[in-house]
Image (cartoon, rainbow, N blue to C red; front, side, top):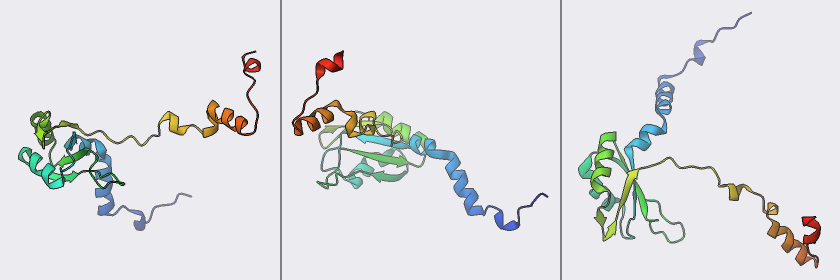
Length: 148
């Protein structure tokens, strides 16, 4: 027998909207978001926003902070409402100076959360680890036997 979905399984309008936004994906967000590198230590969100607002309506400004020092990490992101505004900001602000530092300005790339090949390897995959362990136990590797 075939079963039918009852009305309780229909998507709500809010879910459709969220799904639509997810379908737009990060590509439109990243196309509207500008990476700004080379920031001086004293640059804060307001300073960065004031420098970039002449090129269009700014949606958000973020400057990641170093967790140990609490100071900015030398870069930030400016998200515009429109892609064309982000392009105008790049065209006009690449190579500009704020607080004596030359800015590097380009389209932000999505963060790659993939670990590097080196960080993916277990510690025992390193030959040094074995040799150190053997040395700690008063032993050594017979290199001649390994070459044979």
